[in-house]
Each structure stands twice: as structure tokens, then as C-alpha cells.
Length: 260
Image 1 (cartoon, rainbow, N blue to C red):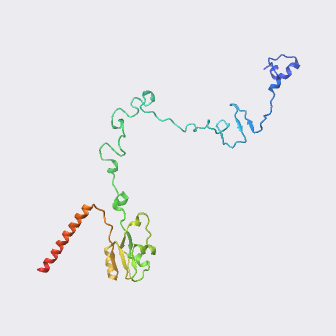
Image 2 (image 1 turned 30 degrees about the vertical axis):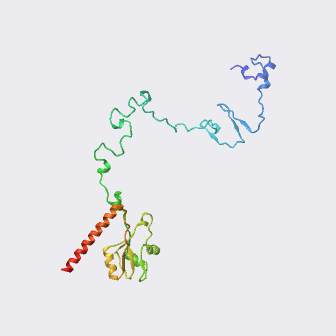
Image 3 (image 1 turned 90 degrees about the horizontal axis):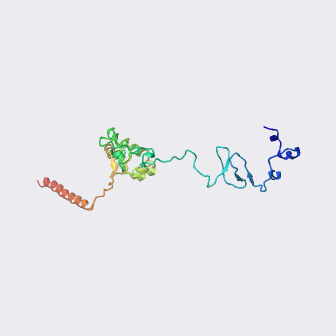
């Protein structure tokens, strides 16, 4: 590096040295910015003008530069979006002539293909494995059909002689607190424990042991009717006719021994 390159251009005329620069040196002097709210950031990349008074969020990119979020610079993070495979667009698409589906077979044809678990007609896996009984195996046969109450629970509820025991009174006493599906189930009395009071019990069903114990104590039992299953009017008419026919046969069979 020569000595002339280290000397400022403003000193060259006074030293009697020639300079290739031709122009006014005043235009190269730094001037302060007339607007105090603007700040020019000088970086290696092109300068960005940032408004200090603005409230827009500022993002810091990998190079350390702070840039305001604008509609023209919004975009996903690099590597977060991936182009989908373009199936069936020729060999140059990258999946070959058959697009990765193979030469022949049901899975290479157009359409929905085969359902989940289908094994070509042989016994599928979900039918080969053993199943659990009842609700554990997903069968409705294991779901409870009654709200069960034992005689011991009725005795602990402190009913008085002559009181009525039903689904409503047991709820009021706090003996049962059905929720969800159990709120629509009827009451069944079971025979675990003993009962010492004469009560009027109304339930849909009684177990054999509970019925025997309650009759020995002297309780009044009332079996509530169940909800009738809906049938077509024509079927209901045939059932009524059949019931009437068998009622006449039972009456005739009962009258024959009496006449004999």
C-alpha cells in the first residue's frame, strides 16, 4: 500500500500531490438526519428504515438483523412446509411409471381400496383373537339392567315401620346416587343382609333370597311393571288375539276338573 493511499483527499492539494478525485468535498461530509423519529441501521445487507414511534412487532432473523413484520415478509419457518407428492404425473415426478402403487392388484386400482382390517377374505386378526365376556368385551349383555340395593343398605337407611321404599325414597335417603345411564334403570332388591322392619317395598324385581326374607318379616312387596317394547299395531293385534285364545284355553282346562 502506497503512502498516498493513507493520506486524506483533503490534504492532497496542500501537499502538492495530484489526486484522481474531481468534485466538491463538502458533499461527502456526514449530515445529521432531520427527522429524529427515524433511525438508519447500517449493516452489511441493505439498510432498513425502522420507525421507533411505531408499535409493530420486530422479528430478529438468523443474521442478527431486526426487521418489522410486514405483509410482504411474512412466511413459514424454513423447513416447516413440505411439498406433497404429485402422484400420477409421469416418470419425471420421481415415483416411477406406476407411482409407487405397483403393477397389479386391488390396491393399485383406482377407488377407495380395501377397508381397515381386511385380509383378502381369510379370517381377520380381530376375529381370530379371543374375546372377553360381557361389557369387557364390548357386548351389551354385560351392561347393568338394574340399580341393585341390598337389604343391609335398607336397614342402615333407618326407615320406620310402614314406610315406603322405592327408587325415589332411596335417592332422598342417599342410599343410591345413580348418574349417567343408571338414572334410567329400575330398582332391584337383593338379599344380602337382614331387615327387621315391616316396610312397603316397590321395585321392578326381587331376588329369590330377598323375596323370601321380606315375606318372612311381613313386608308388602309390589312388583312394578316394566316398560313395554314398541311393536307394530298389526303385531300388537295378533299378540292380543293370542293372549285371548290362551286365556280361554286355561279357563276351560281349569273348569274341566271341577265339573268332573
